[in-house]
Amino acid sequence: MSETLAQYSALLVMEHHYGAEKVPQFLRYELDRYLGARSSETIAEMPLLLVENQQYIHYRKGSLIFYALKEYIGEEALNQALRDYIAEVAFQQPPYTVSTDLYAHLKKATPEKYQYLLADMFEEITLYDNRALEATVRELEDGKFELTLELQARKFHADAKGVETAVEPLADWIEIGAYVEREVEVGGKTVTREVPIFLELRQFSGDETVTVIVDERPLEAGIDPRNLLIDREPDDNRVKVKDAA
Image (cartoon, one colour):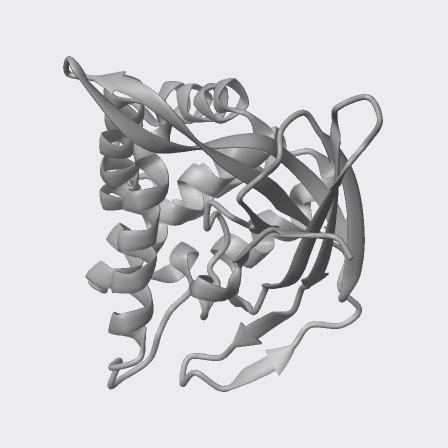
């Protein structure tokens, strides 16, 4: 777990120094590396809480999980849990701290509605198959835009050998979002950047039709657009927005 915390700390330094818009690219890199490595696992994949000497888990998966936890419960809540843990175990004599000690502090900091998420992250090997099937938009009389999303959410638990079991019924909180492109100044140059105009956590039970009102006409929209969750096919999480018929 110490390596996971080091990787997460480096990610937060990057976010605070370069901006949140740089994070999704890094998260996607970590996700791809984790998924690729687990597919070639020859012995057994362990949950994050129990992992030893599997770098693709404590580095790649670990940074994904801690960043997602920050986004769900808030950075200050997570920081306080880490401070409390450090205060408890600093300079201790044997027997030394183990991952379950940290996990106890994370459980205390996590709201009840996200306790399932914490267990999925640390105690289980959890994979999602979330998909954006369609996104349509129509302009309203007040100049705002009605965005309708057809979305699919699926969750699986895998065992150490990779055998997956669907988790039903589903009642998971998953982020949805919409994006536009804007010109911004970076290093004295004008570049085009993707910018979220809407991000919100919604509870999903499976296939859902979601309608939201946004201030601008979005170019793309979808489910878990920032890849906070470990999705085995992240490329289908977003689609281009079309005009409603």
